[in-house]
Length: 211
Image 1 (tube, rainbow, N blue to C red):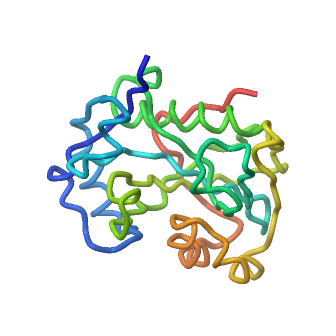
Image 2 (image 1 turned 90 degrees about the vertical axis):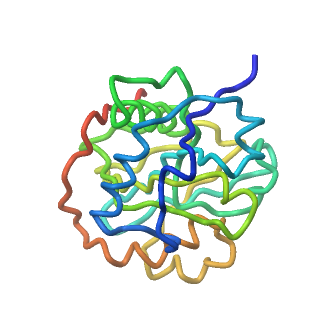
């Protein structure tokens, strides 16, 4: 059976040109427009820029260190082999569907975290901004919902053959910029704008990731 993914018609969104959208009013307007979504075959969505696939993308923070994931060649996305990521994320599927968009996103976020990490969320993740990269064919059909998740203890990677984890302070991340995948390069400069420890408000409908 073909995988179906959550999409929103690009023309509905009227996205700003910034690669990282953090203005609260613009984010709120996006969420309102994205409330009218659908699920279509991933094969179709990957080749049609008339749709944006919404991808929850979570940066995990433990005290003053950030989770950095290195994707190995055992990972399915060949374009990410050897690249470093500052986020955990994935597509939203019909199994994640909730009462509304917020609940649907939250369920997908929790599922993705639970599939990739042994993680216990001490507090809910918080939507910090949107990653909108239209400079390449992959970015033009995806839109990142960037969340920040502070944790008390460092989560462990589930599939250690596919991913390796490192925890680094912000000062060291800049030295790795050229190894970061595109979305992580976009959000890296933004991380300095979020003071630690983080005082955050929960995202409605966010649930605890499965262990």
